[in-house]
Image 1: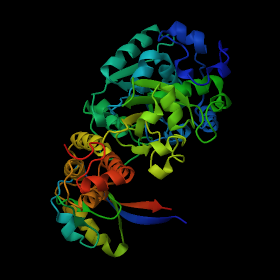
Image 2: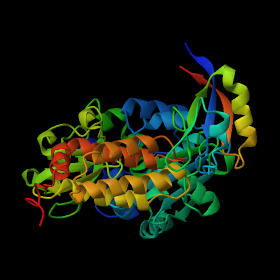
Image 3: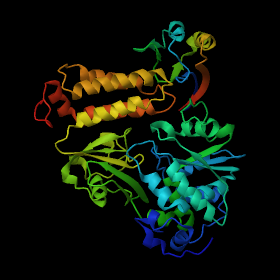
Image 4: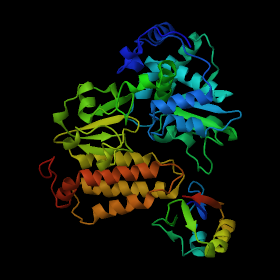
Length: 75
Length: 403
């Protein structure tokens, strides 16, 4: 069974560790020793539906446009 | 298809260098002319049956990349950039058998209907390829692009970036190369050794390829031997060969070594007691090692594994492209911790700190450099576990205490 999931992709080549996303999505992201976002799954973080609006805010407000929200199919 | 001038069964091991000389006459005397006219479907089936896997490091089945390459104005890239300081095989192949690589590139280019062929390699390698191109009857249009001598310059997204912009840095991958690579076109990127094998599969067929090696690891592979060995060698060994077999082929004495780093700086250590295991992902699963790009680096008995490893982690930290924070900051932090252990600092939590940092950087780069570096650190801490404990209590068995 495969299902569609919402996923937050972090482009670490763009990310500068400003930390806005970790404030908007504390349920999903914490900051590492240097202030960069850490989430389960490395650069592709699964987003539960109830957090989709907050995730969209994080994408829209990231000053470096380092976040992307997408639907993926997971096995 | 043209007739073969040499019984392919005679090629077997050593097949990639059977021509003996890099010129076209020697190449055609050994292998015959390049068979043309392979369609994508036919080549895909033959590659699938052959079991050929990529020789650049990741080890994907060659047919799968071909299948994943979309149609349209496709681009094929032969990747001969060896970022690994201990790797010599691609340079050796391009110097001694450039026509085999070009045959593979042109064959796969025809099969996907490519409009552009690239060969990306360091300056020295390009010189022999240019010479080979000048002698070719089929006059393939191959664009030669110089790769900088840098660790990450051969990473797939860095290669595409280098061809587009001249900057060999990895980039974030939202789309697959097969769909949208060079200038947004479907792109097929193979290591040069993979293409050389492909050229032989296209000539002699899948079952010939399988006449060497094992069912799990068919054909042959090139290994670059370095480190504490009498001479640096590039050897061609059948798939499924053990670590000991390959060391012996390269005239290195296995009993003189405490461990071998398999797969390069992003690889894993394999200790002496495991030298009789086959050099395959399954054979070396316990150590998390795979043949990768075929690097075998020896560590002599009596040498400190932690000291050697610390040097490698520092090198990896300095090889960061400094684009991704976790890699730019995490790798130097990781290197410092390993260096402190190697230097004999008696701080018990250093080993778990190294593990934590390795876990922290994994999966958090545009490319797999942080992941590969973390994997090497995990391997160092596991294989030299006793040595780590000795160091943390102020002892180095290699140095018989601290001088």
